[in-house]
Length: 263
Image (cartoon, rainbow, N blue to C red; front, side):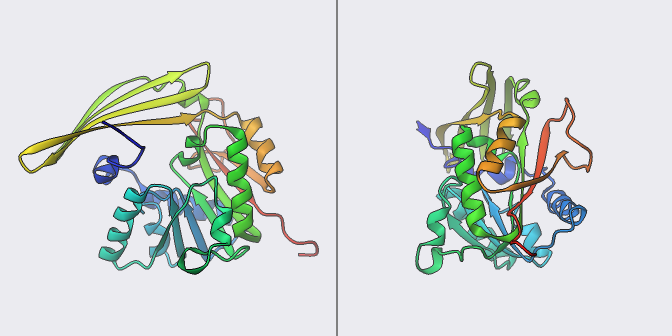
């Protein structure tokens, strides 16, 4: 049976991604902030998944809110935050529909213009499949950021996604996962089909999820950033302060909501 992305996969996501260096991401983001003379105390982790990208910021003393559209991933994130004694707040929303979070009453509400830093890491925004929708993300982020607040995110490049073809078999104590990649050149889409089996006592539950990432052009992203109200401060070859290269697999963008006149 086919399920939405990050529903059944949520159960085993942290096991599959156990070698990812989440602390490195937080340290790199801090380095980018310092490089541009930016500061932050409040952080939104957009597309936070199971919270692994949120927790390093919380341990560094930031006030963190995680946002994701997958209820299953958020359930894991909340349980992990409680186990680790981290006061990270998690909200459910699609990255393309952030503005309602500024209007909803109660616990789901975020104060407009109150956030110092929004991050979106691990190619999460490649899941936004059109530039028009990407602009919606940018407009929502601007709504959340204070004037001068930063938005730092990464994207997988076309150079990387165009080479992502093949099959992998991943196994754990309570799961088996067949991971199939293919790149669809006309649409510049990387499609990942996950066929998994989850142990349920003496039986196995089968699931399928299909994930898609879009290879957005640098020029297209730059244009939509401006139209969405963000100022682009720099683009970087991942985990360095070097400019983007032709062979860059992952590109980091450092942007901010423009400061008020006179600041």
